[in-house]
Amino acid sequence: MAMLRKLQQGGLLTGLLVAPLLRVALAGDAAMRGAARAAAGVESAIVFVGSAQCDWDDSTCRPGQPTTAQERIVYAVEVSTDGSLKPRPELSVDVGGVPAWLTTAQVAGANCLFVSRLDKDDILGLPLSSDMKPELPGSSTPAGGQYPVFSAVAQGRTLLGANYGSKEGASAVSYHIGSGCALQLAQSIPHHGGSNVVPWRQADAHTHGVLPTKDGLAYACDLGMDTVFVYKLLSDGKLQEQGRVQTPAGCGPRHAVLHPGKPFVYVLCELSQAVLTFQVSEHSPLLTLAQTSSFVPQGASAAGSKAGEIVMLPDGSALYASNRQGRNTITGFGISKDNGLLTKAQEVPAPAFPRGMTLALGGKLLLVAGQSKTQLVSYSVQPGGRLEATGHSLTTGLPPFPAALAMMP
Image 1 (tube, rainbow, N blue to C red):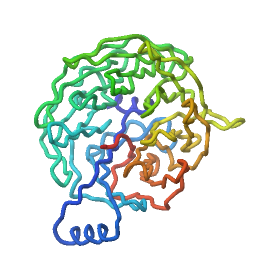
Image 2 (cartoon, rainbow, N blue to C red):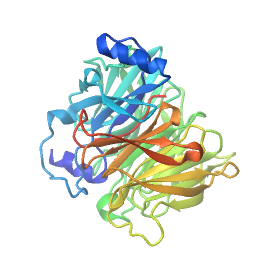
Image 3 (cartoon, helix red, strand yellow):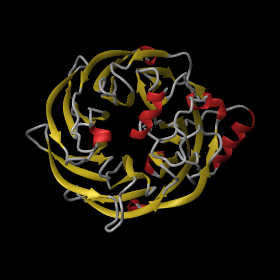
Image 4 (cartoon, rainbow, N blue to C red):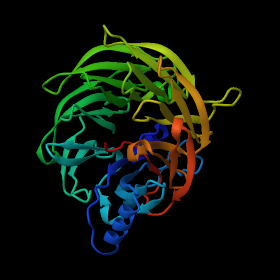
């Protein structure tokens, strides 16, 4: 348990995902509310929220506390186009471990929820019912490394994952997705060694995220090594290394997003609190650094802060990065239609310790989870990508110390 709590300093225990709420007629009052929303033209979605536990860098955290029963539950919240948030306890489920990451996929006509259970070193595959309730018991598969913290679906048939590791156990992994949302480990590729630029975070390899692309590549961010690994996903589900890209020293690459229409990859630096813009070569799978964009205002202190998450609008016009603890902000960047470079557009206050975030309802809303005060907050995405607070915030019907990650397309 001490190791589990120690990992919170690195921002590991996370999990939120958004699944579209199909307008299924529910019994009683729920059906009446759904009909009223439909008549008014209001869309809604179900957001599953998993506990991130408290982070040692958070001044409100009391390290060493045992994991609570609530921290093992994936909670459900309904979000509407006006940003309103409503707990949906009937869709919540105890997954039996700390849900470090949640991912959904539609595979062979079935909706699946994949739960990275950090304290179990496994991935739990759960089918989703027609009303989006995760169906237990599901099936568990060894993570192929230590401390699974991320997963993403590649080409509709493979789940890619990242194991953060400790002194060992960091790796990029791939799994076959089978019937009933069951997984089979295809390959685990260990990562070794750290850059040691930031000794307390980079003494060893720490794989933190994997970004799949439509053309069969995958970019694995290793925070400890200051490296982005470039892999090719083979037809048998295994990964073949194509090369490595070094980030600026002390960047600590955490997660990345891919532009939907231009050859650019944007990497979030957790430690240096910046976004790196990489151009993808036409003739090589390797990346070329084109721009470094800090989201700490000029003259402001970056001390005590660390980045949490990065998301991009579906049309590729803007992206957002969260910054935790010292600053507690969301920074929005506009993306040039001509050259893919970033221009800082705004910085807005975020709930205390915004570990993660996700877009909802096709990019109409941005959801941000604050760990310190157990909050889920919504922002409206305006034309041009600017954010406006909706005024809606939820503090009940959530797990302690929530964090927001992944969205079901």
